[in-house]
Image (cartoon, rainbow, N blue to C red; front, side):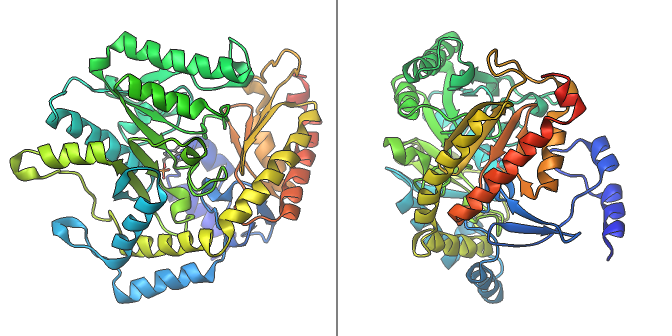
Length: 458
Ligand code: PMP
């Protein structure tokens, strides 16, 4: 079918996720056709380097035949097996065991979802269940970080603290309680590490005090805030937040949907600070986007609390038809093998250190207020004035211009809010591919200086 016909069908029929519906109809779809390694080719034959690993998920890179083989072999043998009624399949059992081994501490029990949002949704439901059956039914409130993102399920989007996910939607009140993010660049009490950590810890304490510890269930925490603008915390922040949650007697859930599977260096970001959460969500890099899959790892306290106290014959009524899908599990097992035996985790660690240094060279650009990175996860915050940190207004249409110029220059990244570039290259990238991403980014930033709407605000 021709590209034009596909574009027309798309306009008429596909409701795209997180999209401006009217804007999309006007602009039209960009059809991606094929990919290999870190490069994507679109339907017009334009080759781009993928600085965002799809949607920060294609960690191992595109085109791994061994993953295709794993999926095909599983489809041939057993394309589907339910996990209901105590049925199971080999790849899903092996994957649960592998994740229990890879995740920190006593996160030994794995519930499978189809992606991140429903892993979070499962956590929300199981936390309610846990407190209800263990005799503390008033513990309901879920805290999360300002600018945090935890998916867009009907309750989980309330835990997400981004305005676009709230406006004109309705949420139960227990999921909208926010704690200060470790946003050093704009932290009112100072940008040094100790001040940033102290501000978040004080905010967590104040929130629990305001609501009453008996009413607070859990704190959901991204080790590095992703969709809220890649806010990289100082070292020690995650541990301080985890310890404070324990002291306040609330559960600590680490949402490693982005940070998991080597994105910031170690397999999980929690590892870097010796943090053992009560629960951990993961998705994205688990299958590197080759198949849909998410997981919720549950520690012994919550697992036993539910198992030993579930009433009515012990049934825990939470599940999905495709929970623990054997094809996705077979894909994940092969992806995990590639991180390890294929050397992709180690490559990501080496290239991540290079990326941090190389990206920092963009700090001299007149539009760049701050470059922040941890491993292969980075944000570049743009400002109209470097000294005052003044933001661009919506009228400058910076995200649209950035994305369009970046695309023309052959690099894909994400533009958040009005002024933040998000980057998450595949872990398989070489140093020269990182050089290419950074060179094309600099070109894109230079191009911005010539755009009248942007120039008008400088
Ligand atoms: N949590 C975090 C931290 C995420 O970044 C995302 C997705 N970007 C989600 C949850 C939701 O995952 P999904 O889009 O797979 O539902």
